[in-house]
Image 1 (spheres, one colour):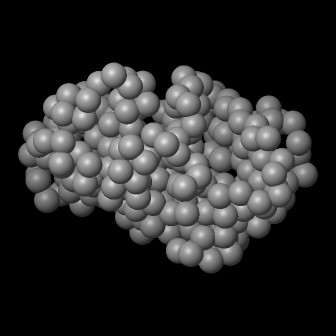
Image 2 (tube, one colour; image 1 turned 180 degrees about the vertical axis):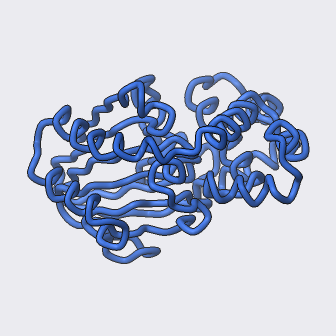
Amino acid sequence: MERFSSILPSPLLAPYIKEYWFLSDSIYQGKQRAIPSGYAGLIFNRGGNIYSEEYGLHQKSYLFGQSVRPIDMRFNNLNIVIVVFQPTGIKMLLDISGNELKGQNVGLDLLSPQLKELENRILDTSNEQAVVCLVENLLLGYLNSCEDYNYKRFASVIQSIEMGESNISKLAYKACLGYKQFKRLFSEYIGLNPKEYIQINRFSKTLHSLQTNSSTNLNEIACQCGYYDKSHLIREVKSLSGYTPNEFLSNADPYSDNRSLFQSFFVDMRT
């Protein structure tokens, strides 16, 4: 039986960390589809192997970047901890360029000795709150190196996108940057270009609407989420999830408020 829990970060790290997730599954073998979400993160694997065609056998623990396509993963004896970063979190805390990490899984031994040591300690720690303390004790040490003005700049841009702004020129103006410079820095800090991030944000809102408004038809959702028409919505959902809207609903778990962010990352593979 699957067990999931989440813990919010401390106030000092909340601008850079979204949530900490703890996921385990007692079944011997299972499969999940990871879908683009607009977030990157750290995975600490305390269970069995994880495999995908894209990456082969996944490393025990790794930093994963933004993605623009679904990835089918198979696992056995699942027991993982996931640190979900805010869109700018990896760049701001770890000073790793998001566009270099895009579509990549990078083992902790290639990143820093401190992260590798953290992995070893997490693998030996079963208490969830104790795991969060270990992660935060390390990440709090990176706070002084954060470039505050860039955090504020891109946090404001992300908020505008969340509110429905999709005009890249207007977003560049809000960031007080030229158009080309804005696109370059956005990719560096977020890990996606502005068009890709806007597309994935719209996609996530669409999945939420599909799960929470069963009586709403696709034409209405397309209009609400900023698609040209129903056909545009269906193509984009298929491209980013591998499913049509109806197939997605057939595979997705019932909507849950406390798992809503998790459900924007993963969908079951039942069919």
